[in-house]
Amino acid sequence: MDPYLHQQSGTPPPFLTKSMEASAAEKAPATASGGTRRVLLFPLPFQGHLNPMLQLADVLHARGLRVTVFHAAFNAPDRVAGYHFVPVGAGVPTADLVPTGSNADFAGALLRINERLQGPFEDSLREVLQEEEDHEGARPACLVLDSNLRSMQVVADRLGVPTLVLRTGGAACLVAYMAFPALCDKGLLPPQDHSQLNLPLDDLPPLRLQDMVFSTTTPHETMTTCLERIVESAKCSSGVILNTFNDLEGVELRKIIDGVGVPVYAIGPLYKISSGVKSSLLSSDQTCLDWLDKQEAKSVLFVSFGSLASMDQEELVETAWGLANSRMPFLWVIRPDAVHGSGNVGLPDGFEEETQGTGMVVSWAPQQDVLGHQAIGGFWTHNGWNSTLESICEGVPMICRPHFADQMINARYVEEVWKVGFELEGKLERGNIERGIRKLLCEEGGEMRRRADDLKDKATRCIKKGGSSQTMVDLLVNCIMSLPSSISMGLV
Ligand code: UDP
Image 1 (tube, rainbow, N blue to C red):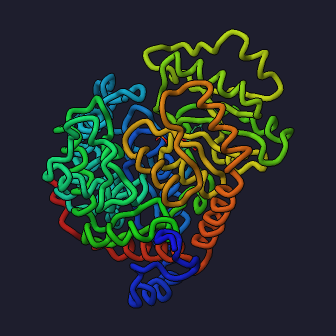
Image 2 (tube, rainbow, N blue to C red):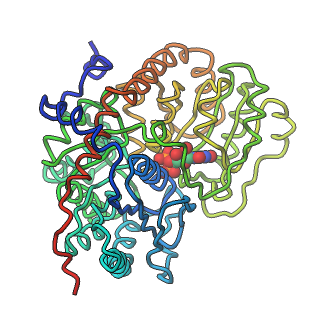
């Protein structure tokens, strides 16, 4: 039996002890109104991080908590009525804080964001705490921060504000990050030569060494520091919140609990339990939904590589002809910055004529609605965690083409653990692409879709009353409500 798929839906998560279960059952109704405590949140200013944090804010707000969102002044999220928004770091130089394209040094940018926003955040947090005190309001219950913002956690600790950490990636990814130092100690990372890349990692099945090479442009020391801080943020928090669910990653969640020593709340899929709030940094082209209405059920391939990944011009041309030659309907998202090093997207001559009626290209799509549309038969994705989770929760099988960071880990799980897709390996070349599309939509896709539908059912059950994620939300709210309210602020 597949060790990853044996858990029965609806059974309590293995990490939910009897006393925790009782606590969730007893206390949740009492705290359902949530009182009037305020929760502070600080997302990382990137699309794949803003959405889950705002969805979490929405879930907590619905339980009666008041919400203040600190956010970087650049890539600011859309404002949500009823929340208090506090921009941080207006005026700080941002040119090297926003990674551009798949070859960018993301880890370096993360460290710089921490360094540059820490001082301004301290000023803003002091102000917010002082305002609450001036108005004799209850102290904020806690700060929920993105796990990439360790420096902001240090500030919160200094000012006596308890922290919870939101991991916007999957559980398998955090497990891999926790194992990173040991792989370095063993001399496996960074890999010494190309032949090592295929090496299976015995403690992290089904991952291989190559899945742990998060970027080819980031120096090893920068990567090590960046991952260390993520794990540190989890260990130094009052709890770790993950946008995943027990039936999907129960084994990995268990490993996290054993490793971090603080409570772990797997409350995903967040987009399914919030009221649909999201913050699009680009505006979505809704007309693609009308176009999808006219397509046959499960016939269309959705192609999108998230908000940051990019390709070169030659890959774009090969992708275009691969899609056209497959003769399958497609909806392709090409962001204005989709081709690295160029502000222009040059689709090849003749492509538009060739695909008229069968294909549609947009610069940004309402992705969750698209994946949930009955016309979608498959998703060619870069496997960012949100995209992977959204595809699973809508029962859509995937062609995986990971670019960097956790995407290789997610793609590996899609192919080897959940078996709801496969990786498109090798050079991005039209023949290869055409074969991949046919494999997904015409050949092996049926079986993968059946498994994806099964996971979709499990996701649907876990967010219902008594389901694992719903129970975890109750426990999380209880935890927030019971965090100490009168710690000395340390304001000086
Ligand atoms: N997304 C979207 N429209 C698009 C492409 C992406 O709304 O055309 C959303 C998608 O639903 C997901 C997020 O952007 O929630 C991308 O996050 P992910 O973790 O998949 O990738 P990242 O952008 O962080 O690489």
